[in-house]
Length: 352
Image: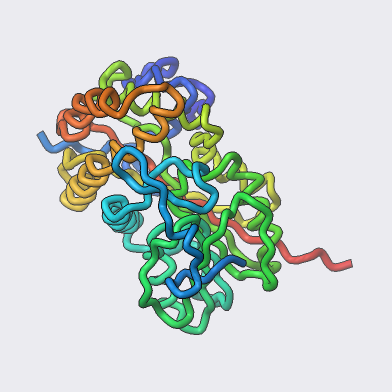
C-alpha cells in the first residue's frame, strides 16, 4: 500500500500540488472501487419552520455585502442564506447526488427501514424531503440555523431552527442520522456532531456523512499551487481555520467514526470535477454543473471570511476573484474535489 504520510512531492508521482501542505493526497484512481489506478481522462426543539410560528427576529435576516445571512446565532456561519445562495445549494445538492450515483444514502437502510431520521444542517431541505418520500412511514426531523426550507413538504418531514453545535436534547432516539456538505458549520465535527450522533442513535442505528474535501486534488499537475485557484483554496482553508471552522476533518471521517465508537465503518470516495474537462460524459456533465456552482458561490464563500479574517474590502475581494473565476472555467486545469462518504453503526450493548 502506498505510504499515505508522504506528500505528492515526496512520492514523486507527478501530482504535486504543494502549497496545500496540510493535506495528504491519498489516492489517484478515478473511483475508489476501481481495480486499476486509471486517472480521469481529460477531454482535450426550536420553532417549527412556518411563518406563523417563527419569531420576527429569526426571520429578520441581517444584511451585509449585499447579501442576507442567518439571524439565529448570527455570525456563527459565514455564508449567506438568500435566494441566490439557495439556488446554488440546489445545484450543489444535485451535483453531489449525481456524483454519488443518484443515491441518497449508503447505509443499509433498506434491510431495516428507519422510523426516526435526523438531518443536521439541512440547508434548503432537499435531502430531507427526498427521504420523507423514500420512507413514508418514517418521521424525518431536519434542523438548520436558517428557516429557508419550503412550506409544502411531505407530512412526515419537519424542519426546526437549531444550532446543532450545542448539546442535543431530543426526546426520542434516532435510527439514522445524516450530514451532507456541512463545511464551515462546526468547530469540531468529531465532538459536536459525530459524538452527539453516537449518543443520540438507538443501538444498531446508523450515522452517515457525505462531505466534500476542502481543497482540490489533481492527478496530472495541471493545477499549479501558485495559480489563482490554488492560492484561493489555500486562503479559504486558512481563513476557515482562523474562524474556528476548520475544514480538514472531512478527509479523516473514517478515523473520527472509529474513535467515537462506531462499528462496521465504511468509506467511499467520489470525484467531482471542477468544470467539464473529463472525457467521460457523465463526469463532464457533473463538472459543468460544479463549475456553475463554484462561479455562483465564490463571492459567497469569500466575502464574509476574507473580510473578517484578512480585513479586505468587498471590492478588493471581488477583484481578486477575477483570475480565480478564469481558472475555475479553464478546461486545461484538471482539478476535482473528492466527496468522502462514510457510514457506521452504533453497536448493540454487550450481553453480560
